[in-house]
Length: 220
Ligand SMILES: [Mg+2]
Image (cartoon, rainbow, N blue to C red; front, top):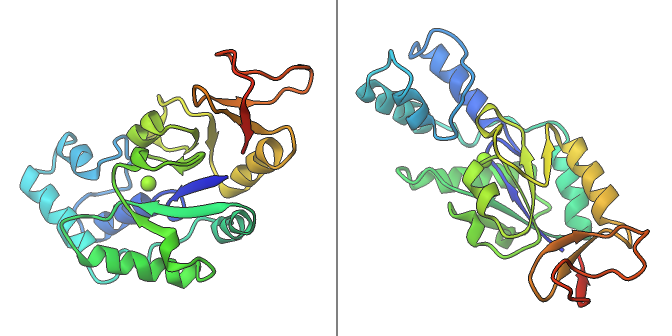
């Protein structure tokens, strides 16, 4: 089973760190709930900051020394990713902040700092993550969850409340529970080799077949 794990706002707390930095630097007066995944769009649609001020704020925070390197980890993130990595094929999939090529460098170092048990080729830089081929994605970005072809686990955020995912979580303990409950046992998830649907086995069904009628199912 192949699992993709997003970094920003799944393994770390990027947006809350950003907002705190914006308050400390005097761009905004107080902590705000982010109701849009894209910070630029969010601030540009929420006066009183002018568009120029928004650009200035984003650049000065994202370009400031070690912003990406010092992002705080979410609780249990390392423990759960380590557990997943021992059992499944895991990739960290993250979109860099493209205006700064050094962002990728900081992100590599951040991963090495906390996830040294992962190999270099388990980190993928990509923004259109729905192009990835795998079984599960853990992410917070609405469009990624909407378009990914597989099982979706969404990290709950104010900006993704209206998005339907297979699972919605607030923390890594919940991710672990889901994987242990629905994926680790014999009768967990299957994929239909005919139509590609993901199906959760229900033990009371004697003949397990897909809604499309196909019996050729692959256990994840
Ligand atoms: Mg994210």
